[in-house]
Every structure is written in C-alpha cells, then in structure tokens.
Amino acid sequence: MKIVIAPDSFKESLAADQVAKAIQAGFMKFFPEAEYHLLPIADGGEGTVQALSSATGGKMETITVTGPLHEPVKAKIAFSNDGKKAFIEMAEACGLHLVPLNRRNPLQTTSYGVGELILHAINRGAVELIIGVGGSGTNDGGMGMASALGYQFFDKNREIVYGNGQDLFQTCSMSDINRDKRLDDVKITIAADVDNPLTGQNGATYVYGPQKGLPETMLFEVDQAMGEFYHMACGHLGKDVTNLPGSGAGGGMGAGLILFANATIKKGIDLMLEQLRVKEICQDADIVIVGEGKIDGQTLYGKAPMGVASCAPPQAKVIAICGSVGIGSEALYEYGFDAIFPTIPGLLPIEQIMDGAYTNIETTSRNIAALLQKGGNRVW
Image: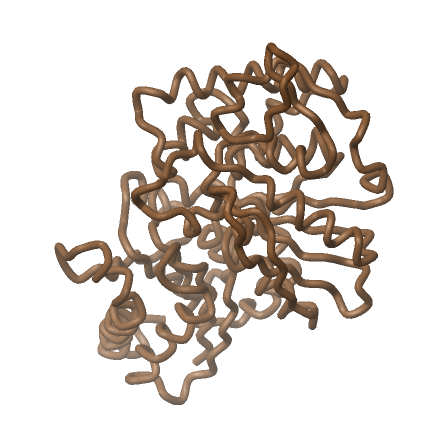
C-alpha cells in the first residue's frame, strides 16, 4: 500500500513537516508495512521557504529584518546552490505568528521587512526571486515593502509615511525617484496562497482583516482606503493591478509586488506541486492525505489541500486532516475529497489546543487508520 502524506502547516501550532510526521505516526500503528511518502506542502504561506529549499537542495540562512511591529525579527531566506535564485516567505518578516494576540491590529503592522529580504537577496547576487505571500499579519497593501525598496509616500503635508496599515488613510502622493534600479534586472514570481482581488467583499480587507485583528466595524473604511491608495499609486506608475486574481494576497502584498517590483503572480500551490513533483509521486497512491489548520469553503480557492487532492489518481482515497472544520467544507466532497476529520478533541483553551497539536493529529490519524484497516480491501 502506498500512502502519500502532503499536509500544509497548522498555522501557529505545527509546521508542515511535523504535521506529516504526526500523521505517519498514527497510521504506522495499523499500517507499519505501507510505503510512505511525506511531502510537506506550502501554498505561499508559512513553510514555503523550507519546502522549496528542500525540494531544490538549497541553502537556508537567517537575517535580521524589521518585524510587523517595527521590532527586529529573525527571518529565514533560502538560496539555490548557485546563489542565483532566492526563496522568500513574507510570513518570515511579518507573519501573523509574529504578532501577539493582544497586539493584533493590521492598522499598526508593516511589511517593511519583506522589502529588506528582497534587498538582501539582490545584494547576494540573486537574479530570480520566488516570494510566498501568505500568512501575513499585515494589511498595508505592500506599502511598507515598497518603502524599503526606495519608494517614498507622502501625507497631505508632504511628510513621509512608511507603511503601516494606518498609513493607507494618510497617503496622498508618492515618488519613485529613489526606487532601487536593480529591480529592473531581477525576475520576481509571487507564490500566492489565495486568488482574492485587492478590494471589495472578496478582497484582502473583508476576507482576511478580521483574523488579523481588524474590527468588523472598520472593514468598509479600511477597504476604501486601500482602494484610494492604489488609485493614487497605479495612476502615478501607469499600471492598474487592483483586479488581478491574487492581488489581495498577503494583505495586498500581491498587488504591491506586481506594481512596485514588476512581479508576476502564480498560485503558490501550483508552483509547489511542480517543484515537489506531487502529481508524479501520487500517480499510483492508494491513500492521499492532505491537511491544514482549518478546512472550509476557502480551501477551494488555491489552498494546499485542494491542490494536492487534484493530483490524486481516481482510485485513491483522499482524506483531509485539519484542526477544525468550517462553513462551506461540504463543497470539497464534489472535488475528490472522501472524508474530512478535525483533530481538536474538545472545548479547550486555545493555548492547550495549540500545544497539543502533534498529539491530537497523531491520535486522529490512528483512529482513521483503524477504520481503514477494519474495512480491509473494501476501503480501496
């Protein structure tokens, strides 16, 4: 029996490689002789750098950049063996996990550190950059990142603003005279974990603002400020990016990289599936196991579990293991999923749930394996 285990991370609790190991540990209790293939996946969010680096035999290093709260943070960046390609993960510099629960407010966070990672890659000689833009704690439209690259933004008094989410309300004009010209010689590809547009009911602010700490009562005005900022910036640079799929990824970082760094955008999961040869590995699998922290209706839109499930052959069972199941998850059964299992064991404090992630995943996996074993060959 061949079992492919290809989960994404469980946000803020367990990295993708640990999730894969926990699932394998549970299945090993009942299927010790199975052929296992562990493929930790990312879709542009946390784990993208690690997964791409591992897939290409790259080298990882850690540098200090400006964090989401303007405090120094350690961020990982990876380079290919020849140093010509760099892998950057937005979440390393301004991820939601870097913002304590009691300080989550995207009006006060910045993506400045992402720009610093880009400059570090260019300084090291990289001519191609792949940037994952998921898992952010920001909603600044990439203004902070652009500021690090040399763009200047001004309020009505011609005072410089540097790119907090709040600065979307203040910015009236901009200058690109100090933009780092080396950007013209670098190919940048965005690995986007979602395909949301920049603004509107399905845009960055409305869909992801609340989980970053933005009150529901402020969604309309922040979305409007985002739109007005891009109306100004796109007019200045002569390029409209606001309606492109994925422009809303990373709190508007998708739009920011396209506009300010001339990047192209690609679904992060498509890029990952290609790099990891997932379809090739899954072609003769009996069971394909996917997973992420929460599975709901949004999983359909460019998320890792959906991408991996699309690689499963018709004869394989596709099982999803997640922290929790949300509204709209039932739609996944029409797209090749056979079963979805949450791992949270009960009503517990969030800290206890996060700390117990590995054990909960292993226990759930063991229970699933027991059910499959009982079914014998009828399962396949």
